[in-house]
Length: 240
Image 1: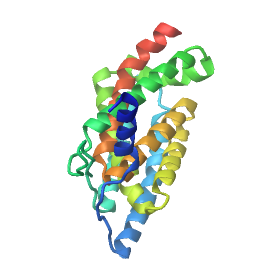
Image 2: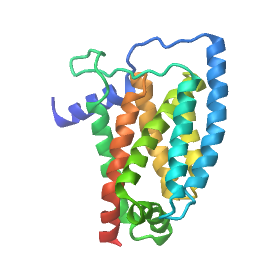
Image 3: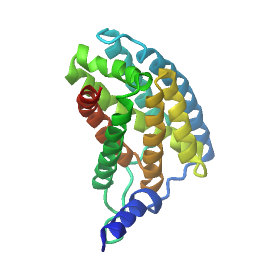
C-alpha cells in the first residue's frame, strides 16, 4: 500500500470506523450519570478557573490542580461504568487496545502545535499568556508540574470522554463534549489554550466514538500534553 493509502487506512481505523460494542445501560442509570456529570462539571470549571489564575511559584497551584484532578476523576467514577475500549488491528480485527494508534495521534498533534509555535512566538498577545502558564514549570518544580500535567490529563479524559460522553447520548456526543471542553477551558482566558482544547477535544472525542472507551483518549492526551510541557518552552524561547 502506498503512503497515502496507509494514511487513509490509519485515519479510518483510528478516527472514523467504530469498533462494535454494546455499552447500553438502564434509563435510571443514564439519568443518574447525567446528574453526576453536571454537578462535576460545575465544580471542575470553577476549580480550573481558579487554578489557572494562580501566580507561577505559588504552592497553591499544586493544591488547586491536584484538587481539580480529584474532582474530574471522582465524578467520572461516581457517574457509572467506564470502559477502556478496543481498536482496529491492521488485519481488520477489533480486539486490540488503542495504544499505538493513540501514540501516533498524540505525536501528530504535538508536531502540529509545535509548528504553530512558530507563529505564536511572534505575536505577544498570543505568546504571553501561554508563557505565563508555562512559567509554573520554570518557577516551580518541573517534575511536580509534569506529574500534575499527567494526572490532570488522565482525570480530564476520565470525565470528558468517559462520564460526560456517556451522559450526552450517542448522537451528538463528540460535538457536545468538544464544545463543553473548550468552554470550560475558556475560564483560563488563554485564547490558545481554548483552541488547543477544541482541537485535542475533537480528536480524542472521535477516538472515544471509534474505540468505545477512554484508553485511546488518555494515551493521546498524555502524549500531546507532556510533549508540549517539555518541548514548547525551548521552542518559544528560541523563536521569540
